[in-house]
Every structure is written in C-alpha cells, then in structure tokens.
Length: 343
Image (tube, rainbow, N blue to C red; front, side, top):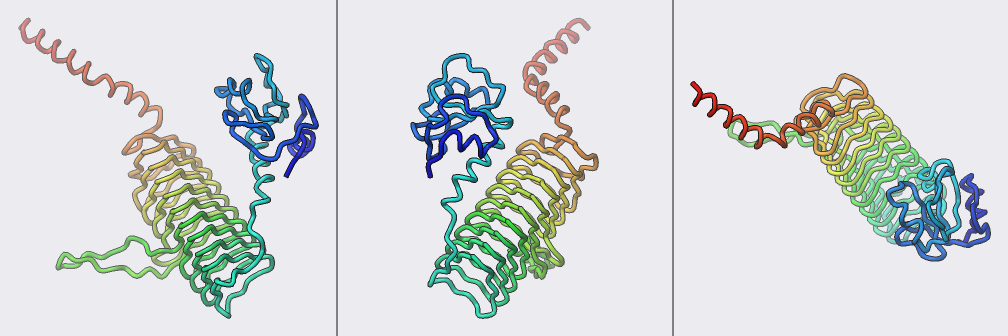
C-alpha cells in the first residue's frame, strides 16, 4: 500500500509542509526511519532525530518550529498521537485475517457462527457457542459451552474462554489469555487440608475492551466477574473472582486484583500494583506502579503511591526524607553524644 503525503494529510486532516507527492508504504520509528516510511515526532526529547531521520514523511504538531533544516516532508496535525493511532489502524487493515473457516477447526453442530467470521486451525467451539458477525478467531482458540461473542471480536492464538462467558462487541483478547478460570477459593479443614470451593459463575466482558497476552480473569464464585465497557488490560494481569472494573479504566502489566474488589471508572493503575480483596476503589483513582492497595479508596481522583499506598505527594515528601535517614541518624547520634558530654 503506497500513499502520497497529500493523501495521508487528507486522511489525517493535516497540512503538508514539503513535497506532497512523496510516497510511503509503511510506518517507522523516527530513529530507525528509512526512505519510503512515515514516522512521527510526538515528544520533543526526540527532536534531534527529526534532523537525521531518513524517513520520507514526518508527522509533527502544527506548532512545531524546527531549529534546523528537516529533510523529510512534514505533515502538520493538531494531535500527533491521535494521528498516529489513525495511521497505524489504516496500515494495519491489510494484515487482518480473511473470513474463512479452517478445515482443522472443530465446531459443534449447535454452534451459531455469524457472517464474515474467520476461524483458525485447531480452534474448538463447543456446544451452544454463539459468534457474532465479523469475528476473527485465530488458531488454537478454545470456546467452552455457551460462550457468546459479540460482533467484531478478535481472539488471538491460544485464547481460552471457559463455559458461559459473555463477550461484547469489538473486544480484542491477545494470545494465551484465559477467561473464566476458577477463582482462588479454598476452605481450610480441621486436618489442615484445603477443600476447593466450586465456582459456578461466569465472566462478562462489555464492548470495546482489550485484554493483553497471558492475562487471566477468574469466573465468579456465584454471579459474574465484570469487565465494563472500554477497559484496557495489559499483559500478565490477574483478575480475581467477582471483581468489577469500571468503564475506561486502564491497568498496566503484572497487576493483581484479589476477589470481590470493585474498581471505579476512569482509573489509571500502574504495573505491578496489588489490591487486597473486598475493597472499593473510587472513580478516577491514579495508582503509581508497584503500589499496594490495602484498603478502600473513597475520594474520586485520588493519586496514590507506596506499599501500603498513601497519597502520592505524601509519599514523595516521605521518600525525600527516607533517602536521608542514614545521614540524619548519624547527625542524631552526634547530637545525642554532645548532649550527654555536656551533662
């Protein structure tokens, strides 16, 4: 797919600054740009590469003023990152899986499969499965009994969806994610052994959710584990049984959410954050990476840091003191000795 600078500017609602007829056929990173590629400058700390990149076209903001000559043709846009998202979506359309069902796929006779659906080799659709129009089910995907997929769902290779899960429209689930496994529930016995609690609930994933590779979402013990509209989960996240995650919340990699915790909408949660179970987190909460949440967060828009987490600014001030503790301890000892000697 080759496009001129002018065609891309029309697509991105931008303005060409340079040769409108230059052709590109792929995106590239600014420091690795080659002739025939389009790159972008979204963060000025990479500005030096704007003057050395070999990319044919460079996306920049409309107010960008170069300090020296730029060889690439510029396309000036209002929002560079929004333009990049649109650009990558455009170039990615050519890599979509074609709508066909592989001969090696196993589809139960009761399964209902919509129009323009692709199903890869060695994927399994069990009894009662329903698949909406335009879904892409890649190789070695497992859909258990009565699983429901909405329209335009993409399941990458190795995704496993246990029985009775409900997945909405335009959901993307990356490789080897597991949806609907049993929660971590056991009852201690008098003899010291543990007896398993059978989980009979399910997982419900609403529209426009994206779930990263190797993430696991446990089914409810009873009722549902609920991932609401627009949630974005990174790779290697653990979501416990009966958790609720609110609309448009984003969680970075390796976070863990214990059972029955309720996270509000519009939250931003860093990598390796851990949540205890049975707490409620207010809307708009922001949590720094590697923090530990040991209790409820009641005030919307709270920013937290540390383990156990405290208000973000308090943590930064405390850490500034903590770094100086050895020096402060030494000074304290000197003052104490001086006071003793004076007595």
